[in-house]
Image 1 (cartoon, rainbow, N blue to C red):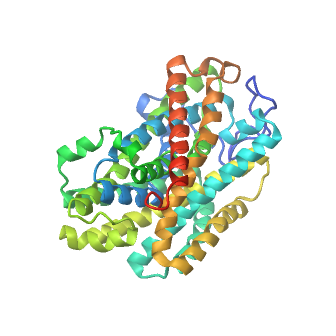
Image 2 (tube, one colour; image 1 turned 60 degrees about the vertical axis):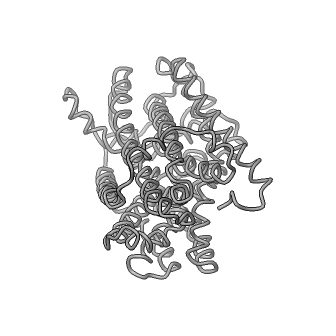
Image 3 (cartoon, helix red, strand yellow; image 1 turned 60 degrees about the horizontal axis):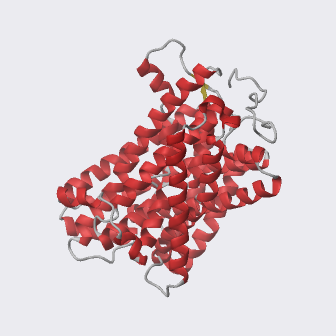
Length: 455
Protein backbone atom coordinates (compact mmCIF):
# COMPACT_ATOMS: atom_id res chain seq x y z
CA UNK A 1 0.00 0.00 0.00
CA UNK A 2 2.92 2.32 0.67
CA UNK A 3 6.70 2.42 0.50
CA UNK A 4 6.78 3.90 4.01
CA UNK A 5 9.43 2.23 6.20
CA UNK A 6 8.02 -0.27 8.67
CA UNK A 7 10.24 0.92 11.53
CA UNK A 8 8.89 3.56 13.93
CA UNK A 9 10.22 7.12 13.74
CA UNK A 10 13.30 8.12 15.66
CA UNK A 11 12.22 9.30 19.12
CA UNK A 12 12.52 12.92 20.12
CA UNK A 13 14.20 13.34 23.50
CA UNK A 14 12.31 13.87 26.73
CA UNK A 15 10.06 10.81 26.59
CA UNK A 16 9.93 7.93 29.08
CA UNK A 17 9.89 5.39 26.24
CA UNK A 18 10.24 5.20 22.49
CA UNK A 19 7.13 4.93 20.26
CA UNK A 20 5.95 1.34 19.75
CA UNK A 21 4.75 1.90 16.20
CA UNK A 22 3.26 4.32 13.74
CA UNK A 23 -0.07 6.00 14.30
CA UNK A 24 -2.88 4.69 12.04
CA UNK A 25 -0.36 2.39 10.33
CA UNK A 26 -2.59 1.41 7.40
CA UNK A 27 -2.62 5.03 6.18
CA UNK A 28 0.64 6.44 7.57
CA UNK A 29 2.71 8.28 4.96
CA UNK A 30 0.59 7.05 2.05
CA UNK A 31 0.08 10.49 0.45
CA UNK A 32 3.30 11.86 -1.03
CA UNK A 33 3.96 15.61 -1.07
CA UNK A 34 5.54 16.52 -4.44
CA UNK A 35 9.10 17.75 -4.00
CA UNK A 36 9.89 21.08 -5.62
CA UNK A 37 6.24 21.89 -6.27
CA UNK A 38 4.84 25.39 -5.90
CA UNK A 39 2.84 26.81 -2.99
CA UNK A 40 -0.64 25.93 -4.24
CA UNK A 41 0.24 22.40 -5.27
CA UNK A 42 1.79 21.69 -1.89
CA UNK A 43 -1.18 23.25 -0.12
CA UNK A 44 -3.47 20.96 -2.09
CA UNK A 45 -1.35 17.96 -1.09
CA UNK A 46 -1.66 18.86 2.60
CA UNK A 47 -5.36 19.78 2.38
CA UNK A 48 -7.75 17.20 3.80
CA UNK A 49 -6.96 16.38 7.44
CA UNK A 50 -8.25 19.78 8.55
CA UNK A 51 -11.66 19.04 7.05
CA UNK A 52 -11.85 15.63 8.74
CA UNK A 53 -11.19 17.45 12.01
CA UNK A 54 -13.66 20.25 11.18
CA UNK A 55 -16.42 17.65 10.84
CA UNK A 56 -16.34 17.18 14.61
CA UNK A 57 -17.04 20.88 15.03
CA UNK A 58 -20.33 20.72 13.12
CA UNK A 59 -21.74 17.37 14.27
CA UNK A 60 -25.34 16.85 15.54
CA UNK A 61 -24.27 17.72 19.07
CA UNK A 62 -23.66 21.25 17.86
CA UNK A 63 -27.16 21.36 16.44
CA UNK A 64 -28.78 20.56 19.78
CA UNK A 65 -26.79 23.15 21.73
CA UNK A 66 -26.93 25.83 19.02
CA UNK A 67 -30.69 25.42 18.55
CA UNK A 68 -31.29 25.64 22.29
CA UNK A 69 -28.99 28.66 22.61
CA UNK A 70 -30.44 30.53 19.63
CA UNK A 71 -34.11 30.01 20.41
CA UNK A 72 -33.75 30.74 24.12
CA UNK A 73 -31.16 33.52 24.20
CA UNK A 74 -31.16 34.97 20.70
CA UNK A 75 -27.77 35.92 19.28
CA UNK A 76 -26.02 36.25 22.67
CA UNK A 77 -24.14 32.95 22.52
CA UNK A 78 -22.56 33.71 19.13
CA UNK A 79 -19.65 35.07 21.18
CA UNK A 80 -19.21 31.62 22.73
CA UNK A 81 -19.15 30.00 19.28
CA UNK A 82 -16.50 32.49 18.12
CA UNK A 83 -14.36 32.03 21.26
CA UNK A 84 -14.65 28.26 21.00
CA UNK A 85 -13.59 28.33 17.36
CA UNK A 86 -10.54 30.48 18.12
CA UNK A 87 -9.59 28.03 20.86
CA UNK A 88 -10.06 25.18 18.40
CA UNK A 89 -7.76 26.80 15.80
CA UNK A 90 -5.01 27.20 18.41
CA UNK A 91 -5.36 23.71 19.87
CA UNK A 92 -5.55 21.96 16.50
CA UNK A 93 -2.39 23.77 15.38
CA UNK A 94 -0.63 22.34 18.44
CA UNK A 95 -1.97 18.86 17.61
CA UNK A 96 -0.64 18.83 14.09
CA UNK A 97 2.70 20.17 15.28
CA UNK A 98 2.96 17.39 17.88
CA UNK A 99 2.26 14.73 15.26
CA UNK A 100 4.61 16.13 12.62
CA UNK A 101 7.55 16.84 14.93
CA UNK A 102 7.51 13.78 17.23
CA UNK A 103 5.91 11.16 14.99
CA UNK A 104 3.44 10.48 17.80
CA UNK A 105 -0.27 11.12 18.04
CA UNK A 106 -1.51 12.60 21.33
CA UNK A 107 -2.53 9.18 22.70
CA UNK A 108 0.91 7.73 21.99
CA UNK A 109 2.53 10.81 23.52
CA UNK A 110 0.54 10.35 26.74
CA UNK A 111 1.51 6.68 26.88
CA UNK A 112 5.18 7.48 26.28
CA UNK A 113 5.25 10.29 28.87
CA UNK A 114 3.03 9.28 31.81
CA UNK A 115 3.15 6.24 34.06
CA UNK A 116 0.95 3.33 33.02
CA UNK A 117 -1.77 3.99 35.67
CA UNK A 118 -2.05 7.65 34.61
CA UNK A 119 -2.13 6.72 30.93
CA UNK A 120 -4.86 4.15 31.58
CA UNK A 121 -6.90 6.77 33.46
CA UNK A 122 -6.56 9.21 30.58
CA UNK A 123 -7.58 6.46 28.15
CA UNK A 124 -10.75 5.66 30.11
CA UNK A 125 -11.69 9.35 30.21
CA UNK A 126 -11.08 9.68 26.49
CA UNK A 127 -13.14 6.58 25.74
CA UNK A 128 -16.01 8.10 27.74
CA UNK A 129 -15.75 11.27 25.65
CA UNK A 130 -15.70 9.30 22.39
CA UNK A 131 -18.79 7.36 23.50
CA UNK A 132 -20.56 10.66 24.29
CA UNK A 133 -19.52 12.06 20.90
CA UNK A 134 -20.59 8.93 19.05
CA UNK A 135 -23.87 8.98 20.94
CA UNK A 136 -24.63 12.46 19.58
CA UNK A 137 -23.75 11.41 16.04
CA UNK A 138 -25.87 8.26 16.19
CA UNK A 139 -28.90 10.08 17.58
CA UNK A 140 -28.53 12.95 15.11
CA UNK A 141 -28.37 10.59 12.14
CA UNK A 142 -31.35 8.59 13.41
CA UNK A 143 -33.42 11.76 13.87
CA UNK A 144 -32.56 12.90 10.34
CA UNK A 145 -33.64 9.53 8.89
CA UNK A 146 -36.87 9.79 10.88
CA UNK A 147 -37.60 13.29 9.61
CA UNK A 148 -36.81 12.58 5.95
CA UNK A 149 -38.11 9.04 5.55
CA UNK A 150 -40.29 8.37 8.60
CA UNK A 151 -37.91 5.62 9.77
CA UNK A 152 -38.53 4.74 13.45
CA UNK A 153 -35.86 6.21 15.71
CA UNK A 154 -34.67 2.86 17.06
CA UNK A 155 -34.26 1.46 13.53
CA UNK A 156 -32.34 4.54 12.49
CA UNK A 157 -30.00 4.12 15.48
CA UNK A 158 -29.25 0.53 14.49
CA UNK A 159 -28.78 1.49 10.83
CA UNK A 160 -25.89 3.80 11.73
CA UNK A 161 -23.74 0.71 12.39
CA UNK A 162 -23.37 0.39 8.60
CA UNK A 163 -20.97 3.34 8.53
CA UNK A 164 -18.29 0.88 9.67
CA UNK A 165 -18.48 -0.73 6.23
CA UNK A 166 -18.28 2.66 4.52
CA UNK A 167 -15.12 3.64 6.43
CA UNK A 168 -13.48 0.29 5.71
CA UNK A 169 -14.23 0.47 1.99
CA UNK A 170 -12.96 4.04 1.68
CA UNK A 171 -9.74 3.54 3.66
CA UNK A 172 -8.93 0.42 1.64
CA UNK A 173 -9.16 2.46 -1.55
CA UNK A 174 -6.99 5.29 -0.18
CA UNK A 175 -7.25 8.02 2.45
CA UNK A 176 -8.06 10.62 -0.22
CA UNK A 177 -11.38 8.87 -0.90
CA UNK A 178 -12.40 9.36 2.71
CA UNK A 179 -11.34 13.01 2.61
CA UNK A 180 -13.25 13.58 -0.65
CA UNK A 181 -16.47 12.18 0.81
CA UNK A 182 -16.12 14.28 3.95
CA UNK A 183 -15.53 17.51 1.99
CA UNK A 184 -18.51 16.77 -0.25
CA UNK A 185 -20.82 16.33 2.72
CA UNK A 186 -19.46 19.53 4.31
CA UNK A 187 -20.32 21.44 1.13
CA UNK A 188 -23.87 20.07 1.26
CA UNK A 189 -24.24 21.27 4.86
CA UNK A 190 -22.87 24.71 3.95
CA UNK A 191 -25.21 25.06 0.98
CA UNK A 192 -28.25 24.08 3.04
CA UNK A 193 -27.54 26.57 5.80
CA UNK A 194 -26.56 29.31 3.40
CA UNK A 195 -30.08 29.03 1.99
CA UNK A 196 -31.60 28.85 5.49
CA UNK A 197 -29.97 32.18 6.41
CA UNK A 198 -31.37 33.76 3.26
CA UNK A 199 -34.83 32.48 4.21
CA UNK A 200 -34.53 33.67 7.86
CA UNK A 201 -33.24 37.18 6.93
CA UNK A 202 -31.58 37.96 10.28
CA UNK A 203 -30.79 41.57 11.23
CA UNK A 204 -27.09 42.08 10.48
CA UNK A 205 -26.63 44.52 13.38
CA UNK A 206 -28.03 42.03 15.90
CA UNK A 207 -25.88 39.24 14.50
CA UNK A 208 -22.69 41.29 14.77
CA UNK A 209 -23.66 42.33 18.31
CA UNK A 210 -23.99 38.67 19.27
CA UNK A 211 -20.30 38.13 18.60
CA UNK A 212 -19.39 40.57 21.41
CA UNK A 213 -18.87 38.79 24.76
CA UNK A 214 -21.12 39.62 27.73
CA UNK A 215 -20.81 38.85 31.45
CA UNK A 216 -24.45 37.78 31.44
CA UNK A 217 -23.34 34.36 30.18
CA UNK A 218 -21.43 33.72 33.42
CA UNK A 219 -24.18 35.13 35.67
CA UNK A 220 -27.04 33.11 34.22
CA UNK A 221 -26.68 29.37 35.13
CA UNK A 222 -29.09 28.27 32.39
CA UNK A 223 -27.18 30.27 29.78
CA UNK A 224 -23.86 28.98 31.12
CA UNK A 225 -25.04 25.39 30.81
CA UNK A 226 -25.81 25.86 27.10
CA UNK A 227 -22.56 27.82 26.65
CA UNK A 228 -20.54 24.93 28.11
CA UNK A 229 -22.47 22.58 25.84
CA UNK A 230 -21.44 24.73 22.85
CA UNK A 231 -17.84 24.66 24.07
CA UNK A 232 -17.97 20.88 24.41
CA UNK A 233 -19.53 20.54 20.97
CA UNK A 234 -16.98 22.86 19.37
CA UNK A 235 -13.63 22.02 20.99
CA UNK A 236 -13.95 18.23 20.95
CA UNK A 237 -11.47 16.04 22.87
CA UNK A 238 -11.31 13.24 20.31
CA UNK A 239 -10.39 15.75 17.58
CA UNK A 240 -7.15 16.50 19.40
CA UNK A 241 -6.15 12.84 19.15
CA UNK A 242 -7.47 12.50 15.60
CA UNK A 243 -5.62 15.46 14.12
CA UNK A 244 -2.24 14.55 15.62
CA UNK A 245 -2.57 11.19 13.83
CA UNK A 246 -4.09 11.88 10.40
CA UNK A 247 -1.68 14.73 9.68
CA UNK A 248 0.92 11.95 9.46
CA UNK A 249 -0.82 10.45 6.41
CA UNK A 250 1.29 12.90 4.38
CA UNK A 251 4.79 11.80 3.39
CA UNK A 252 7.06 14.80 3.89
CA UNK A 253 10.80 15.16 4.36
CA UNK A 254 11.71 14.14 7.95
CA UNK A 255 14.35 16.86 8.43
CA UNK A 256 13.76 20.19 10.19
CA UNK A 257 13.03 22.03 6.93
CA UNK A 258 10.50 19.42 5.82
CA UNK A 259 8.76 19.43 9.20
CA UNK A 260 8.60 23.23 9.25
CA UNK A 261 7.02 23.25 5.81
CA UNK A 262 4.57 20.50 6.78
CA UNK A 263 3.51 22.47 9.87
CA UNK A 264 2.93 25.60 7.77
CA UNK A 265 0.71 23.95 5.17
CA UNK A 266 -1.13 21.75 7.67
CA UNK A 267 -1.90 24.83 9.79
CA UNK A 268 -3.35 26.65 6.77
CA UNK A 269 -5.48 23.59 5.97
CA UNK A 270 -6.74 23.35 9.54
CA UNK A 271 -7.48 27.07 9.94
CA UNK A 272 -9.44 27.36 6.68
CA UNK A 273 -11.47 24.24 7.50
CA UNK A 274 -12.27 25.46 11.02
CA UNK A 275 -13.40 28.84 9.72
CA UNK A 276 -15.89 26.97 7.58
CA UNK A 277 -17.02 25.14 10.72
CA UNK A 278 -17.47 28.53 12.40
CA UNK A 279 -19.85 29.54 9.62
CA UNK A 280 -21.92 26.36 10.04
CA UNK A 281 -22.17 26.64 13.83
CA UNK A 282 -23.00 30.33 13.73
CA UNK A 283 -25.56 29.73 10.96
CA UNK A 284 -27.44 27.16 13.05
CA UNK A 285 -27.70 29.54 16.00
CA UNK A 286 -28.54 32.54 13.77
CA UNK A 287 -31.35 30.66 12.05
CA UNK A 288 -32.74 29.56 15.44
CA UNK A 289 -32.53 33.11 16.83
CA UNK A 290 -34.01 34.81 13.77
CA UNK A 291 -36.79 32.27 13.33
CA UNK A 292 -37.78 31.16 16.84
CA UNK A 293 -36.45 33.69 19.37
CA UNK A 294 -37.58 36.74 17.41
CA UNK A 295 -41.10 35.33 17.05
CA UNK A 296 -41.47 34.43 20.72
CA UNK A 297 -40.84 30.67 20.41
CA UNK A 298 -38.05 30.52 22.97
CA UNK A 299 -38.68 26.94 24.01
CA UNK A 300 -37.47 25.27 20.82
CA UNK A 301 -34.57 23.02 21.78
CA UNK A 302 -35.31 19.79 19.93
CA UNK A 303 -34.21 19.06 16.38
CA UNK A 304 -37.54 17.54 15.38
CA UNK A 305 -39.49 20.54 16.67
CA UNK A 306 -37.20 22.91 14.77
CA UNK A 307 -37.76 20.87 11.60
CA UNK A 308 -41.53 21.05 11.98
CA UNK A 309 -41.59 24.80 12.69
CA UNK A 310 -39.04 26.10 10.17
CA UNK A 311 -41.19 25.87 7.03
CA UNK A 312 -44.40 27.41 8.44
CA UNK A 313 -42.58 30.14 10.39
CA UNK A 314 -40.33 31.11 7.47
CA UNK A 315 -43.05 30.63 4.87
CA UNK A 316 -40.73 28.48 2.74
CA UNK A 317 -41.77 24.87 2.21
CA UNK A 318 -38.22 23.76 1.44
CA UNK A 319 -36.75 25.08 4.71
CA UNK A 320 -37.55 22.03 6.82
CA UNK A 321 -36.29 19.59 4.20
CA UNK A 322 -32.98 21.44 3.79
CA UNK A 323 -32.59 21.39 7.57
CA UNK A 324 -33.05 17.60 7.68
CA UNK A 325 -30.75 16.98 4.70
CA UNK A 326 -27.99 19.01 6.36
CA UNK A 327 -28.53 17.09 9.60
CA UNK A 328 -28.20 13.75 7.81
CA UNK A 329 -24.99 14.89 6.08
CA UNK A 330 -23.65 16.16 9.41
CA UNK A 331 -24.42 12.96 11.28
CA UNK A 332 -23.01 10.68 8.59
CA UNK A 333 -19.88 12.79 8.27
CA UNK A 334 -19.25 12.72 12.01
CA UNK A 335 -19.57 8.96 12.28
CA UNK A 336 -16.88 8.51 9.64
CA UNK A 337 -14.27 10.47 11.60
CA UNK A 338 -15.47 9.36 15.05
CA UNK A 339 -14.69 5.74 14.31
CA UNK A 340 -11.19 6.69 13.17
CA UNK A 341 -10.63 8.61 16.41
CA UNK A 342 -11.71 5.57 18.43
CA UNK A 343 -9.15 3.40 16.70
CA UNK A 344 -6.38 5.96 17.19
CA UNK A 345 -7.12 6.38 20.90
CA UNK A 346 -7.21 2.67 21.73
CA UNK A 347 -4.11 1.82 19.71
CA UNK A 348 -2.23 4.86 20.98
CA UNK A 349 -2.90 4.48 24.70
CA UNK A 350 -2.84 0.69 24.94
CA UNK A 351 -0.60 -0.24 21.99
CA UNK A 352 -3.29 -2.79 21.08
CA UNK A 353 -3.77 -3.47 17.39
CA UNK A 354 -7.28 -4.66 16.61
CA UNK A 355 -8.64 -5.17 13.14
CA UNK A 356 -10.14 -1.82 12.03
CA UNK A 357 -13.62 -3.28 11.46
CA UNK A 358 -13.64 -4.77 14.98
CA UNK A 359 -12.48 -1.57 16.69
CA UNK A 360 -15.02 0.52 14.80
CA UNK A 361 -17.80 -1.95 15.50
CA UNK A 362 -17.00 -1.81 19.23
CA UNK A 363 -17.05 2.00 19.17
CA UNK A 364 -20.38 2.11 17.37
CA UNK A 365 -21.87 -0.57 19.64
CA UNK A 366 -21.06 1.44 22.76
CA UNK A 367 -23.06 4.34 21.32
CA UNK A 368 -25.90 2.35 19.78
CA UNK A 369 -26.92 0.55 23.00
CA UNK A 370 -27.68 3.65 25.16
CA UNK A 371 -29.09 5.56 22.15
CA UNK A 372 -31.47 2.69 21.31
CA UNK A 373 -32.58 2.37 24.95
CA UNK A 374 -33.28 6.08 25.37
CA UNK A 375 -34.98 6.30 21.96
CA UNK A 376 -37.19 3.34 22.74
CA UNK A 377 -38.14 4.48 26.24
CA UNK A 378 -38.40 8.26 25.85
CA UNK A 379 -38.64 8.92 22.11
CA UNK A 380 -37.26 11.98 20.35
CA UNK A 381 -37.64 14.22 23.42
CA UNK A 382 -35.35 12.04 25.52
CA UNK A 383 -32.90 11.68 22.65
CA UNK A 384 -32.69 15.47 22.23
CA UNK A 385 -31.92 15.96 25.94
CA UNK A 386 -29.29 13.25 25.70
CA UNK A 387 -27.72 15.18 22.81
CA UNK A 388 -27.16 18.30 24.92
CA UNK A 389 -25.94 16.29 27.92
CA UNK A 390 -23.44 14.42 25.74
CA UNK A 391 -21.86 17.73 24.75
CA UNK A 392 -21.43 18.75 28.38
CA UNK A 393 -19.72 15.39 29.05
CA UNK A 394 -17.35 16.18 26.20
CA UNK A 395 -16.54 19.57 27.66
CA UNK A 396 -15.85 18.09 31.10
CA UNK A 397 -13.28 15.74 29.56
CA UNK A 398 -11.52 18.49 27.60
CA UNK A 399 -8.94 19.49 30.26
CA UNK A 400 -7.56 15.93 30.35
CA UNK A 401 -6.70 16.20 26.66
CA UNK A 402 -5.83 19.90 26.46
CA UNK A 403 -3.38 20.06 29.38
CA UNK A 404 -1.13 17.20 28.15
CA UNK A 405 -1.19 18.67 24.63
CA UNK A 406 -0.06 22.11 25.80
CA UNK A 407 2.52 20.58 28.14
CA UNK A 408 4.10 18.37 25.48
CA UNK A 409 4.28 21.02 22.75
CA UNK A 410 5.79 23.54 25.19
CA UNK A 411 8.72 21.33 26.25
CA UNK A 412 11.96 21.91 24.37
CA UNK A 413 13.21 18.44 25.35
CA UNK A 414 10.33 16.90 23.39
CA UNK A 415 9.87 19.37 20.56
CA UNK A 416 13.36 20.82 20.11
CA UNK A 417 13.34 23.99 18.01
CA UNK A 418 9.60 23.50 17.39
CA UNK A 419 8.62 24.02 21.04
CA UNK A 420 5.95 26.68 21.58
CA UNK A 421 7.36 30.20 21.80
CA UNK A 422 6.43 32.23 24.93
CA UNK A 423 3.43 33.99 23.33
CA UNK A 424 1.94 30.67 22.15
CA UNK A 425 2.54 29.17 25.61
CA UNK A 426 0.67 32.09 27.16
CA UNK A 427 -2.29 31.71 24.79
CA UNK A 428 -2.35 27.93 25.13
CA UNK A 429 -2.25 27.89 28.94
CA UNK A 430 -4.82 30.68 29.07
CA UNK A 431 -7.08 28.58 26.86
CA UNK A 432 -6.59 25.58 29.13
CA UNK A 433 -7.34 27.72 32.21
CA UNK A 434 -10.54 29.11 30.65
CA UNK A 435 -11.74 25.61 29.80
CA UNK A 436 -11.01 24.26 33.29
CA UNK A 437 -12.54 27.33 34.97
CA UNK A 438 -15.76 27.17 32.96
CA UNK A 439 -16.13 23.48 33.69
CA UNK A 440 -15.65 23.98 37.42
CA UNK A 441 -18.25 26.76 37.42
CA UNK A 442 -20.66 24.52 35.54
CA UNK A 443 -20.25 21.74 38.11
CA UNK A 444 -20.79 24.16 41.01
CA UNK A 445 -23.89 25.68 39.40
CA UNK A 446 -25.39 22.31 38.48
CA UNK A 447 -24.83 20.96 42.00
CA UNK A 448 -27.00 23.75 43.39
CA UNK A 449 -29.77 23.58 40.79
CA UNK A 450 -33.03 21.71 40.87
CA UNK A 451 -33.67 22.37 37.19
CA UNK A 452 -33.50 25.05 34.59
CA UNK A 453 -29.85 24.86 33.77
CA UNK A 454 -29.89 21.26 32.85
CA UNK A 455 -30.75 19.89 29.47
